[in-house]
Amino acid sequence: MAAWTESWFLSMLLVLTRMTTFFVISPLFAYRNVPVTFRLGLSVAMGFLVISQVDADPGLVLDGTYLGLIVKEAMVGLILGFTASMIFAAIQTAGAIVDLQMGFALANLVDPQSGVPMPVTANLKLILAMLFFLAIDGHHQLIRGIMASFKLIPLGQAGLESFTMDVEWLARFFAQSFLIALQIAAPMAAALFLVDLAMGIIARTVPQMNFFVIGFPLKMLFGILVLFLVIPGFFVVLTWLYQQMFEAMSQVMQRLGI
Image (tube, rainbow, N blue to C red; front, side, top):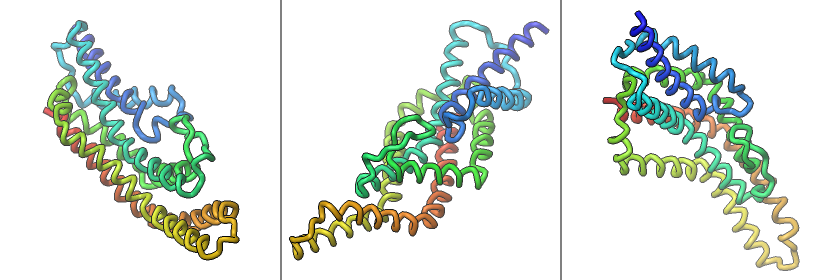
């Protein structure tokens, strides 16, 4: 009985390690205003659900090997959470690119999730993305994903070595995230480029006009107008992005699985 209790406790600790590290970095749950006690409580609650379906390993012993398993489970949780958060990072990057052209790059607001300064449009797009994520029950999908990871990646058996050696897939994943950021920013960036081009032509034909004074306000107003026009399409893009996010998590779990 004592041996079974010890193996159950050690297995539960592995489950909690993966759960906690996932919620520390995953979208929404890593929000600074979400209390740490809530994240820990959610991890424990999910852990009890998982441990009821996962057989405790009777061979687990509290030694150096077990500490290695703790590190491995922490890496699994961090990798899955980081994969999910890359889409939101791409949205932030797209907003920063647009802000640079609109002239909002210096008007930074504090990002409520990371606590670091972030341009206005990037902050607006991130908030809209989070609200839409909640509206489509994306947070429920995240929880289902981390729960399903225990079937695809058994406790202590993640193939981290082969995953880290797959440099080509990792490079392609990061490149795809940056490409998504450029695609999100492209409509507004193109429109603002046309504004720059038009103001340049007018400045050449009417040199008496001081475009250094009126150019920035006009560009900001036009940028805000274009932003409101592209918001409906932005939600369509978000639907596709979230599908890509869950597919990426599935691919990561398959690559980490045995």
